Length: 368
Image 1 (cartoon, one colour):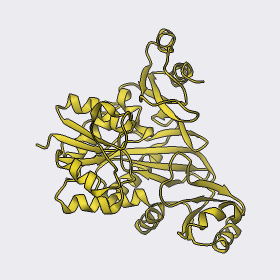
Image 2: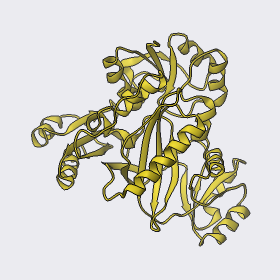
Image 3: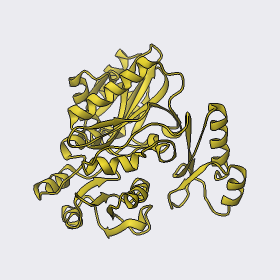
């Protein structure tokens, strides 16, 4: 059995893979760009994830390579595969999480429901799209955007004229009228086994997730079936291995549309550390090693995760633990700055209103 996992990227997702790796008796190594990153405890090499030589040298000591983020260039991913390294998810799948235009093209070809979209390479093309879609739309840079970055809601093509200077097409999408945002997470092994967690509600502020409620309240059996079918289709047809998050819009006319994909553990799945029989981090490790997947049932009827944005843990634990002793606190060893995710808090219980209150109260101790 392979027993050493190499994670490219030293952020909080790599950090949260460490405890389940230890529990499963696995070795875990991390390639970080700089010293002192979140996953510093498991960092075994510093290097540039964009440099094939650095990445190949790191891969010599592991049985499988996986990722804390999706930014490793395709040329580097394919160099790993050519060298005989087991890479999960592989480059043929990961490209659809790296490039939003490629993702939209592929999902549309599969018949997966997505917002109306187009690739636009000029102000004139964007102006035409705006005219056909009520005068407002969402424009995204195809690569590199996350947590609201690389996304603008526009009513005039001139608002993204600077982005056209790069010479690459942009993705423009209809401005979807939605009730709420949902996330369907699953994990898939190379051999094809899939395990799904309950669909959750993701509450956003400024393009950043601030809360997650698991399972999503007031969801019909039909909605849950459709969300699962969409995610299974994407995972199977794209050949995703490891964890997959499918971010969804629940529209005002009762449809589900795919917004984004993440082929790794995801913020909307952090609640699983304390609220599920198998956390997304343990499941991701099992999946990339092609080990049998764990059960995904909930430990309690409700779990609520609240992100701590920009706060600090300094001298605040005693008061938080005294006030909310049942909350689970997870911090990432990151220097606080406004809007930065530095940790999260999770609570669980039988009554949703109470669970939400306790999670928010616990997180509030760390807000500046």
